[in-house]
Length: 217
Image 1: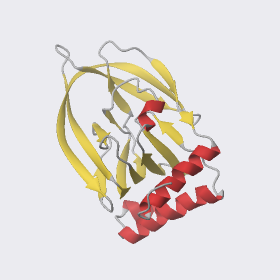
Image 2: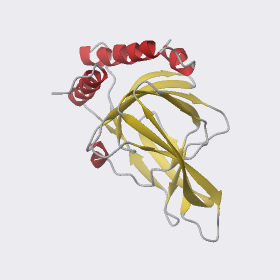
Image 3: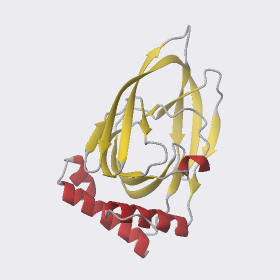
Image 4: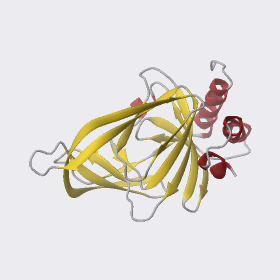
């Protein structure tokens, strides 16, 4: 199974093969999944959902972030532990130091409740914090990086460049999806944009060509 392969740090060739097979299923029409414009500025292709586990392919392309509006900040943490295998390009994982600071806060913590329908309910909490940048880890093609649940971070891809990752998420109890937003921010709702079949197929084909070392047409 794909989730076991990436979760156990499987052979690089196996991971590339699994990603290629999943993308080819999309381009051939064997899979009817639709890519989503993720609020953090990439295409998300949900390959697998199985209980507490999920596998996605994330595709970063120039201009993708212009299609969505980020209503909080790029700094967030997951309710799930993340294992990410870089298929091509370079992906930076910037950890953040977040501490309680009700006197001179830089951000408020928001809780994100995501529904299967693609609606995110973003609600402010009482937590006022100070956020400072921490260490950045940059991973390139063929490398794996991991992130525990509850760790605040942001993903950085060099401006104008492309990248893609094969991502395994494993949900853990007693963790929440959180994002840092404005101190005076209010609750709101975000509806994720789903791509049509044509855009989904174009995204999958572009990723396949770059995995194979070809420049997309």
